Amino acid sequence: MQSQRTPAALLLLTCVAVGVPLAALALLARGRDISLDTLTRDPAAVGDLPFYTGALSSLGAMLWAAAAAICLFGARMAARGGASRRDGEFLRSAGLLSVLLGLDDLYLLHEQFGPGVLGLPDDALLLLYALLLAAVLLIYRVEILRGEWLLLGGGLALFAASLAIDLIVDEAPGVLFLEDTAKFLGIVVWLVYFWRAAGHAAAQGAPGPRLAA
Image 1 (cartoon, helix red, strand yellow):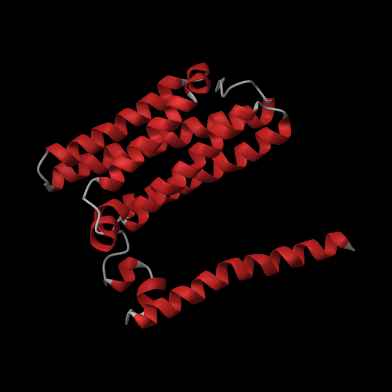
Image 2 (cartoon, helix red, strand yellow):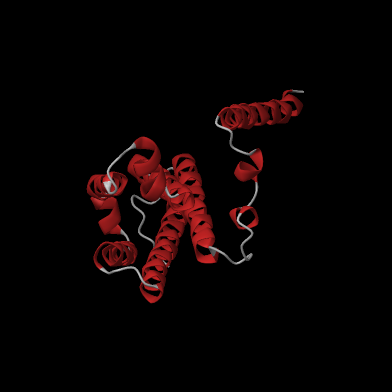
């Protein structure tokens, strides 16, 4: 009987957990005279733009979400499978960081929300992300060096190249494509690294994400 009640309870909890914030968002939008369609419809539809508008950016956000899900699920499975506590903490930290970076990509947090809504300096959130990333790399350096650190380093190098292009080179169509391509490749490599790390830790309970093939 309990097994029959559990799915119903989860269904109710999920609906409440999602429905309450959505209702609050709708009230906030009405109070600020923002059309609800603007919040619920696709940006290309709202702006009457071609369907392929922002294709690479949207795909990048999906890959961030995939990386976050893999890391967080891997952390849960690592704990159950007998992997070291540090393995689970590393994957959990990487998963939460992936969520944050994905939200930044999807909602332009450091480009528009931070400066325009919070009144932060243009690069304040970028500095925060860099500090969080540096903290993860420093705290879990042993786990990283036990694995295919070169793969992770390659992804970080691509992120650094994208950021350098953004900060140094003047904006132009070709330059923007190069910047966004470097960032997209970095996201792909980040996803591949943590896919392998999470799979190894969850399946074998190894003392570190060795990423053996």
